Amino acid sequence: QVQLVESGGGLVQAGGSLRLSCLASDSGTGIGFNALDWYRQAPGKQREFLASINFGFNTNYADSVKGRFILTRDNAKNTIDLQMNSLEPGDTGIYFCHTRRMGIDYWGQGTQVTVSS
Image (cartoon, rainbow, N blue to C red; front, side):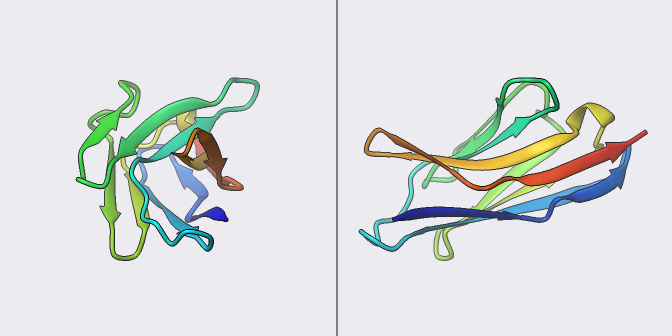
């Protein structure tokens, strides 16, 4: 059974930084994870892709966060960290960790990030 657990959200002023973490586990197969991603859902908006990192540490970022967010990974611990800098009020939302395995999408419970102006 795949589980994704996010942590690290909170309230920060505009221009500040936060670091989010996601711990991925699979109690069924014990197989490692390929791509692990972060998505965000702002109030009243659809969930949007932010960043992705694969087992080989290749990253991909949405234009909206490129240059401000940095995604890293520890394959031994099955964790990914999203370092978010220069935060803006528009970054407010619930941040979700995601992975896809054998055609099935898995999501964490989400962590709230609020950026005040």
